[in-house]
Picture 1 (cartoon, helix red, strand yellow):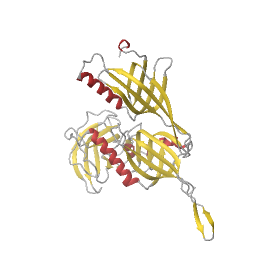
Picture 2 (cartoon, helix red, strand yellow):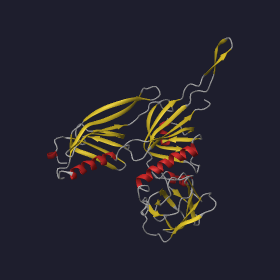
Picture 3 (cartoon, helix red, strand yellow):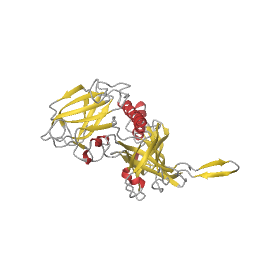
Picture 4 (cartoon, helix red, strand yellow):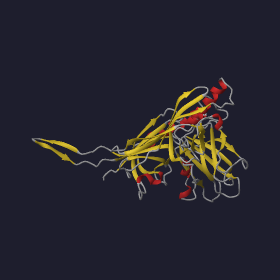
Length: 423
């Protein structure tokens, strides 16, 4: 908005997930806050609150409902960044410029939202840790891996906002009453180290739990890379004769029948041109759902291509590829997505937003039913949060809980892990 139309000279900009929201020629004041957290209450959870930001409705917008809609759209635009981690820049280009990286927008609080003026505050925070290796503190995490790389049911979580709390369980020392004598101390196990991962909001939920393939081109190209379709990793088959197949397990009692699936190719030449989709409930008897052929055009590297399907509510789905776009025999896939909505199935239940919520509910259900109680390899941000030299730990999943956060389109959840048995 031109400076002549607003009186302030300050500006703010928040960038996250490749997009940004900003405002120039405004005014505000910054309050640096902090909450104590961690096992001993000495770790600081820093917060930055940008207070009393104000902006006028665009003066080119007519009075009445048009100006009201302008304010409503602006509120929606800012709320879309809730829970996202990114970079906050205050007063960019000015001598007092401040930049906060890896910070999360935690709250958007309108004070006044009349047709002419919108006033609000923005609450940002980024937990830190000083404990290390389970000694206490709070830290941000963005990637969690439960299980080893060799496991087909390896679990990946890539999170927009995941808070890690490192603490210890209660003292397990016991005291036993002895007849006509003082109680004696019975040594117990040392307190367990606890990893409480809260506020998990998945960046991407693949809508299936496990994935297999007929072949893979080595450890760097295993099919479980399809559970983690971010970064540079992807699935690749061996350079042996076609066909090649990829199979996924959706789990028992799916909450919504698939109405569409998407394939994201790593490279166009190694994308499928001819393939079939089969379904099964026992991984033995397979039923043909649909087939496609001659798809040599329409693929773009790294971009998802969607296919509508019906009668596909099976526990297992299998794609069998008999021809590729280009010459060769190696199938390269960056990701596979399964959706409850499609171009023909789109209503209050089978909507994009409802599909996202169902995906997270499915995710929590499968954590409960397939992973709760298991002791497996646990890695967090490639071990950065557990201290240098810690390649991996074996942790026991103790709890899984939904955490619905107001203002976010998807529910969050928490996972509680314990390790250190027998120390």
